[in-house]
Image (cartoon, rainbow, N blue to C red; front, side, top):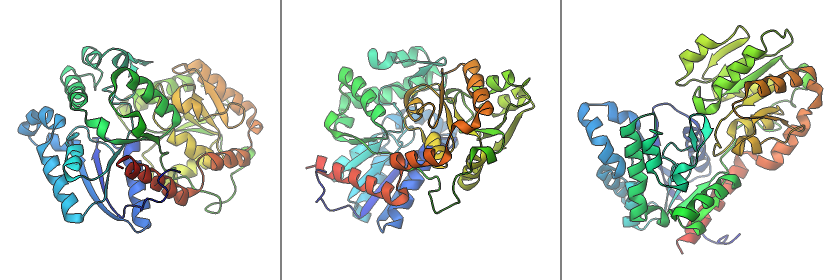
Length: 410
């Protein structure tokens, strides 16, 4: 690839803002930090948490201004770059307390900077192109004011206005035109380019696909995938317990299956805002496991008939389906965005209409009636070709991405 002879950066600053509830962005941030450190890079970390705004009333009142441009972030990041002689800055999330001021710190210090886009927030303040359970692209088609009118960020008029203003203001400044961007899949890249054609938020020549690390065990780290006949009569939901992940659809489907004695159990691994509602609404064939450590989660995936991924939105990277497939486990996926694209029906799972519990219930019943239709070894082999190589391949992809960043800076 172009830039192959560019020396790799050895001193790297990672920047990340944690949301109040942890999720996939935190997982990717931690995995890439571990990759870099394991390969001898000197990694400096600048981490913030949105819980900082809860410290006092004064902090809450100042949050809207700091979300747009945090002088503290600019000052602290510039100091870290100088102190540690940083050669490249890799940003994950800046919303809310870090703010895009981190990029201006990098510009001031003349250090290359990249951001991994874990969502579509450059064009949609809620980040997922979803409103009232349906795909919505009003903001890229019209303006960010659509999100304010519909209170798309956490159902709050004020917070939606703040989020829209953050990105609107930095559009005017041209901030993202100077930043190299990673996106996890080609679907995401095409969707972002489609949106960018209307608004010109970033430089299309600085947008690259760089897949996220996938941490499921690989051959040699555990025994061969369990044959379908030897698996437990269970299906696993793994992820945040929230609207956009389609949890209501999943629980409604299992309600429809209650009368079928052959129906598999539903295991739910995760936590989130719908936790209490889900436990109150679940039928007798549903078990809640809480948030599991990765090894325990992968063990449940490996012995399940399938993993269900019922997302109502595009997602930016279908991590749970990727992990399931690397374990030889079929995926029942809603036919939308990256989740739907992760599944080849009849080979490594099935698709159902997003938000349709009847369609999901039919897919579950078909799986239970003929579990032999899937070959776990073939599913794993295809996943290895798609995501494979393990940590070494993930590291090579990350380094290829960094070379692109350095090449873009000329």
